[in-house]
Amino acid sequence: MPAVRIVTNPKVMMGKPVIEGTRITVELVLEKLAAGETPAQIVGAHPGITEEGVLAALDYAARVLKADIVDPTARAGS
Image 1: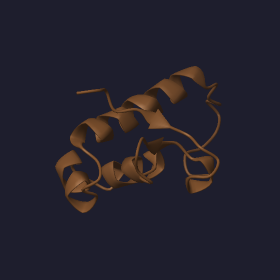
Image 2 (image 1 turned 120 degrees about the horizontal axis):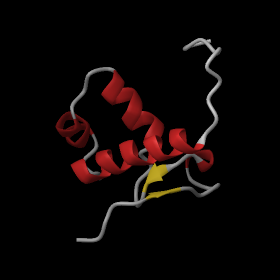
Image 3 (image 1 turned 90 degrees about the horizontal axis):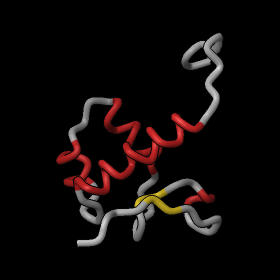
Image 4 (image 1 turned 30 degrees about the vertical axis):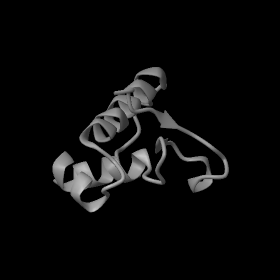
């Protein structure tokens, strides 16, 4: 089975990163996980994705944050 990829396309979800072949954004997956949903619950609510897709979204977010410069003085949520 091919690996699930995260892709961007300016014509899909305003260019936000999505799970390939869907309109499910990385942002949505992260919000649902932060709210306490499990990968299985996310897949149940969005049958077009798999748990591998949820993990791909997490991996993508981790890689983006690792490559970004974070301001240690910024307050979360501000």
